Structures are given as C-alpha cells and as structure tokens.
Length: 582
Image: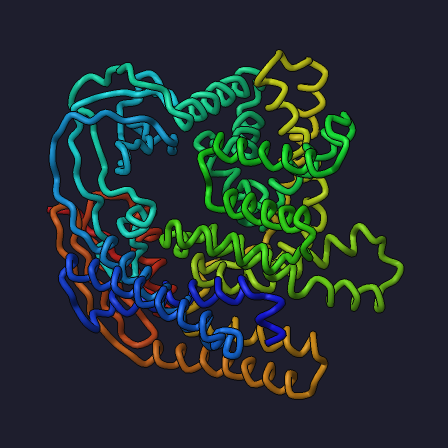
C-alpha cells in the first residue's frame, strides 16, 4: 500500500507499458486471429468493461483495499488492448497508387546521391517524399499540391534484418512517394502547426546564414530546432561512439535547462509579484517551443514531466519525480500507444528512472569513499552512472553496441554541453527577432568548435566503443530484473535483496552462455531470390558462409545482411562470396 500511495501513476504507467508490449507480441505471434472490424468492437467492449470494473471498485471501496492488484490488472488489460490495435495497424499491407495530394512538409531527411527527402503529411497520413536534388528546397509548413506516385515501403528480405517498414508504420508513415507532376503552392488557411513549421524553417535558414562553418550551423540547428538533416554522418558517428548522442537529441536535460533559464529571466524581470505567474509563463514558453520543434517524443515527455511536477508544486502537493514521470507516460501512451515502441521514448524514460532510483545512493556512497572530489564533478559522475545503469540494457538490445568511455565522456562533456545548449538557445531566440551581434556569434562559434573537437576526440579513441554485441529480449528482461533487485538491496540493505541480485546475475550469465552454446551447435540454410539480389546463407555450427549475387557494393551487403545475421546468431567465423548478378 505504501508503494501505491507514493508511486500511484508510476505503477500504473509500468502496467500499461507492459500490457502494450504483451498485447503486441500476442498478436504478432499469431496465437489468435480476429477480423479487424470485430477487433475494434472487441476493444471498445474491453474499454467499457474496464470502466465498469473501476466504477464498481470505487463505489464499493474495493479499490482502496486491493489497490495494487486492481490498478495493475486494469492498466495491464488496457495496455493489451492498445498493443493489439498497434499490431493490427503495423501489419496492414498497403498498395501502390497515384493521386493528387495536398501536403505540408513536416521534416527534412538526409539528402541521398540523387534525391532530397522529406516527411510530408496529408491530414493524418504521412509519406516519405523523394524529389530531385535540383528542385529548390520545400519550405516547412507551406501547403503544396502534386500528383504523387505512392508505393509501400519494402519489407526486409530476412527476419534478422531491421524492419524499416514496421518502424515507419509506428511513426504513422505508410508509403514512399515520388512527384510525377510539378509541385505547386496552394493557398489554404494557416494553422498553428503550419505557422510553427514555417518559423522553424526560417530559423534554420538564419542559422545557416550566420555560421559560415557548416558543422557549427548543422550542430546548432540539430541541438535546438531538431533539424538534423545537415549533420554529417561523421559527426553523428562520433557522438554515438563517445556516448554523447543524448546531447545531440533534444531531451529532458535540454528542456529543463531551457525552462530553468526562462524562469530565471522572468523572475529577474519581476513581471509577477508571486512565483506562480512566473512558473505558468515559463511552462507556456516551453510548450510553445515544443510546438515549434514539432512534438518530438522525448520533448513531449520532458515538457509533460516538468509541467506535472510544477503544477503539483503550485497546488501545494508534494512534487514527486516518479509520479510526474508516470503521469506524463500515461498521457503519451493513451494518446498514442505507438510511442511505447519509440526507442527515444524508452531511453528517455529509462534514463530519468535510473537517475531517480540510483543517484541518491551513488552520491552518498561516493561522498563517503571520496570526500576530496569536488561536489560538481561528483554529482555529474553519479548522475551519468545512474542513467547508464538503466539505459545500457536497452542500448545493447536495440543497437548491439556499448560505449566503454561513455561515463567518462559524459562527466567531462555534460557541463560544457549545458553551456553550449544555453548559448545556442539564446542565439536562436535573439535571431528570431533581431540580427545577432557579431561578437556573440564569434564567442559561440569558438565554444562550439571546442565542444565538437572534444566529441571527435572521444569518438576516435581506439577501443572506446564495442559493436556487434548479441543481446536478446530474454536477456533484456533478466537484466532489468537484476537492476530492480539491486535497487531493492540498495534501498533496504537486507541480505535477501543481495541474494536476489546474485541470483539474477548468475541467471543472466548462464542464459548468455546457453544461448551462445545453442547458436554454436546449430546449422541452417536461408535463401532469398529477388530481381536485384540473390542471397544464400549457409550456417555450419560456428561458421557461416554468405553467397550474394548482386551489383551492389560489398560494404553495403556487409552492413545490411552479414552483420545483422552474425549479431543475432553469434557467429564466430564467416566468409562472404560476391558474385555478379546475371
């Protein structure tokens, strides 16, 4: 009951999240099938049944007596229904078509050798539009119309490959598109979101104009405006290898810094006599910023969490980070259950949860063992390590990679990164109204170059990054059971918690060895033949032979076929034979 009282919404959020994953897996594993229309009626009946159960529990006061069991059951059931709906939607097969489409540009993607690519929206539908590079850039939020050829996103050749089609469907993107007629401007009534997109586009253009160094301009646009299309692959790779990718993404630390900065400025200007007015205005400012950068998953989560935390403060309730995290998570998942599968969403919540769970205990332990360490560096180290504890299993599962020096690089770079974020936000804010003074541009450019030089240094350190690590879903689950057990022991200091931690640690070690043993003693043959490529994979226990007939470069085959297979199957030895496509 104490857990329920302190962490009500966090408890319900976990139940809803688990339910979504379970419902999605249940449907995708083909345990049972229903026609889509019948399923919609079944889900509606399920929601109604849950509402009736909740009402009965409240009226009869059963809910108070059995809080934990009923809350978990209700939200877990609700999650299952949402997860099944997600599975049905992501398994819809789309067909090719041609039609006249009115659309607006939502996001610009990386430029390929021949095409510029954009995410465009037609009402609730989204497409990836490819246009020739010689066509002038399409403007954010500007309404266009064109005759588009729509065709579905290709499914992966093998099950072990990344399913890009499912990934896009979870972002509500159903088709690729090519313009087969001239793209024309159309006159429509302006909306709030179109206006925000136009402002974002103008700010991006201004930053490109102000900074002659392309890397500085691209980094600034990505850091503040979420426009990452100009960031080079080399810079992104160095951020990834150094464990600093979270700085490049607009996340909780960004929003907290921006909120704190706005609140500080409003307080100093003394616009309001009471702190209440300053907090409300600062909250409105960060939500306006969220609209400006098009509602990224981590940004919405951060804004919701900050809002819930400070609204609790204004209502004279005890502000609780776990409760705020739970409320923001529930709102996001009930609005769009597909966010549960968003890797950024998962990493963002895991990092905040890790800091909340472990930072107080780590900070106290480091203070006892190393009192000579300055408070600033001690806190930076503890926060970074706390976040890494809960983030590493997800990184291993989704990306199969681990930054060995990420804790060190974060301790050194986070303070500098926070200074860069504040400076960049001020410049973008000033640039939105007046010309930016030259001395400010020079100061920021110098600071930015120092920061990016450090990122390149950490990213290029030999042995600082381990890739192609096999990590299964079962290992992910056991890893989090181990983390929970360690937290219980850190909180209660009971011998029972230590034994549970040791048990899950040994379970994880034994499980990894069993999976490796199984993979080293199984053989299989997989073959796929398409118009562009013929692939045959022959696995003979610990050795695998790849034979590929195609005109595509060998480097591409290794990246998209060989490496995903050897990671999943834990292949020790392999060879690749390239043949021409006849």
